[in-house]
Length: 145
Image (cartoon, rainbow, N blue to C red; front, side):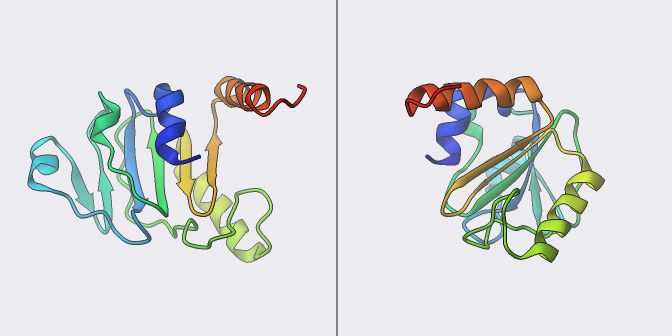
């Protein structure tokens, strides 16, 4: 699974939201002139989107990490974790980095965080959406609820 598969299956994750890119192919997303014309901005090294109206607005590569907000946000500092290949928000062995991740999440309060390294991770404050995704994934993989 890729990030793009997740938001194609659940477009409400990003449609009508404001995104901040903290990692694009392990680096920084460089905005095109058309993205700038469409309202994308840079704050420090992070690309910030206008309100997302279409899935096609979001570029995708590997080792991407996106913070998703309900309102426009300005993020100037965030230590991306997606570049640690084995990082997951739950069971990462490097405890200091895991604590740092959650400290940032609590400080910034994004609605969702989506990351793709050697797997996809999704963190959300929307419990009903998380439950729907978990149930759908269990159905696809033949697991019981």
